[in-house]
Length: 212
Image 1 (tube, rainbow, N blue to C red):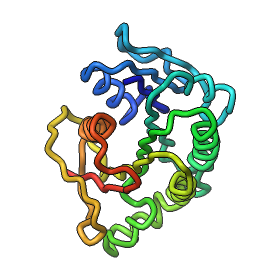
Image 2 (image 1 turned 90 degrees about the horizontal axis):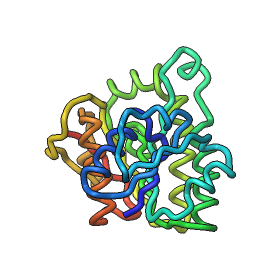
Image 3 (image 1 turned 135 degrees about the horizontal axis):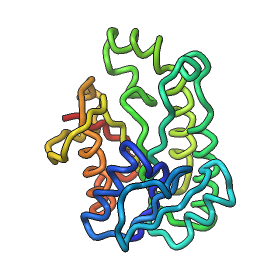
């Protein structure tokens, strides 16, 4: 499979690059700093670009079989107070291009507090969320809405509180909102889910929550 990973230079994106290569896929890592990824592999293509730029992203999509979107913004005083528009901008450009030129398969990684998951995570989580991540996630919510309204074969993965560590493959994929709860998960295990879902789709048009 030829996989485009948007935001592939760090975090979950970089872990997904590693997981894709380990499983024998051809990976195109697309990010502003993709050329600085410290991995050398004949099946890895590093493409520097801006995911909000239609020309950059259109070129990156060319020839791909699937797309994984793993973008993130730094948690800073500015983003806490004023939020971001990155996710909604990328979501709109990405979906429009994929509907016009392909590919049709998309996995977007958002987070524990995105969309309707936020209402199922208890009062303590919601208090902390309100004062730290709400404005950032408000924009993730818009991106999710754009994706859900599309004609794409989408999956929206919502990982829990992220931790580093080696892949375990031992995590829960929760699709029933009554089961949703706060929990941790390793970035490498999120990547494991993404590649597994690309290889054997089970959660198309679903928003699974991922925790250990």
